[in-house]
Image (cartoon, rainbow, N blue to C red; front, side):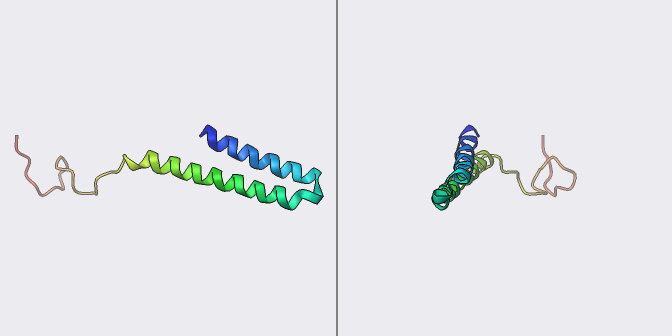
Length: 74
């Protein structure tokens, strides 16, 4: 998450700098878009990694529930 914050900070810096240099604003705004894109990709990868191992079983597949049709043997 620290990486995402740093990438977004770079995008913000580019946008702020473009306000002070109107002759280069198109290039700086394009660079800001690049940093935002990297931040979004990094965040998406982080979320995918976090949720990859935590899949829940489908409803009704738990043998400990009353709605299950499979008998529980001890």
